[in-house]
Image 1 (cartoon, rainbow, N blue to C red):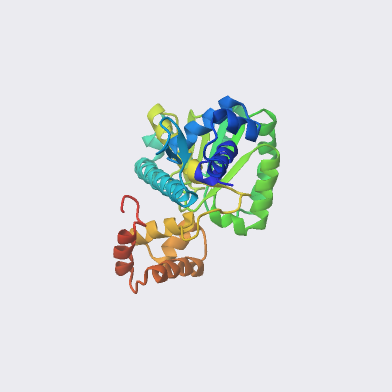
Image 2: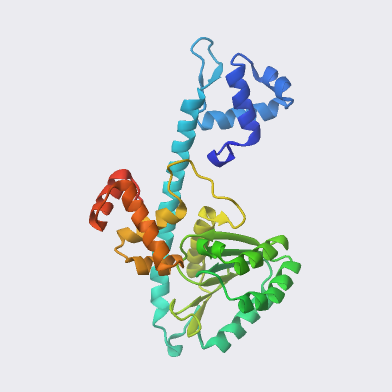
Length: 331
């Protein structure tokens, strides 16, 4: 029940029992819950780490559970701090990736060099990706931005996906949250998951990306036209940065089939992304493009956030968002 706040089922059971039976020691707790004393001690360590236990005011060396109201506030504050830190890491990785991608955006075929291979045209791109997929041994990580994907593209990828999964390759795919409105894409993702693939969604993805065995990456040179050209990157430093970007966004993303769970009043990942894009000065149309949603949806999200803060202009919204602590790095 409290797993989303960092408390596993065993620790939660120990916490509840300590609230009901505050004077029970380790052995009594173990007997009551039918656990080993080692399991109880591990749970006590976790509860102490989460500040859900305090020293007894009456008995030296004994611990007492803090009241549930206080405990839940502690857990939610801790989770909010972790989410803020994660958001900052994502933003740092996103900025690094944007700089990296921009360095290759204007490459010409003659500019290819060590660690960089230039691909021109859709045929060349698909042929190279097919060869890399055939040789992948351990892992394939993918960013697939945009809204719902074309049915013919999804169907065409199934044979390659199946071959990789049958070889034991770990496949992790990140789509945007907006694909949840595309039944065709959701059906494909469910098919992939049933076969052992892993699929999550994030409000915003920086670019298309495929990383093969953490040694080779393929990214388009233009986010506007991914078929025009791409680069194959093999430099160790470059791959380290791209893999870190993927892992950060993956950690904050939501499994496609999982319901959205958040405390009442807390911003959703999509709302947090809209706030960040508004702070960058993007228009509703630009935000819609980044989120792969309609301009009407982007406008509704932005207006809803402004109403929450009672702001009548984008400038006033920015000031109040900073005051509320909605922007990364603010309180």
